[in-house]
Length: 154
Image 1 (cartoon, rainbow, N blue to C red):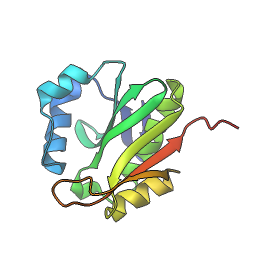
Image 2: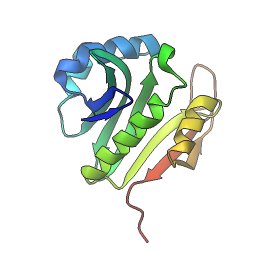
Image 3: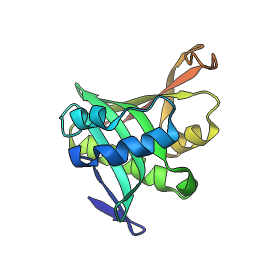
């Protein structure tokens, strides 16, 4: 657990499944439900971190972990709290936790037109590693594949 500007950043566990599902449903149309999260939270292969103000979940990041790589599934900040640096602090906390767990790389896909997300990821040191043309079925938009090397090989 870590505190930043009075907010608590910590790993999420099975007891957080309901709060996680509620926030995900506010942000994403294809949200997972609490049962799905409850089945994943606490497993070694699934890493979820959140930012709390008291009991309220303001932001979260979920990822799968396999063979030293973290595949980020979703990053979300509740809309009233966007633009305050919460997403960046959460991402940096997640990357620290990934290093602590022995990961050497983090990857994610992001819509090429999502300027806010691209700004966040660039500010955390992510770089483009690839492109998926027409990846998003709802819009035909491209997906950028971004990566962050946790422990770069010299």
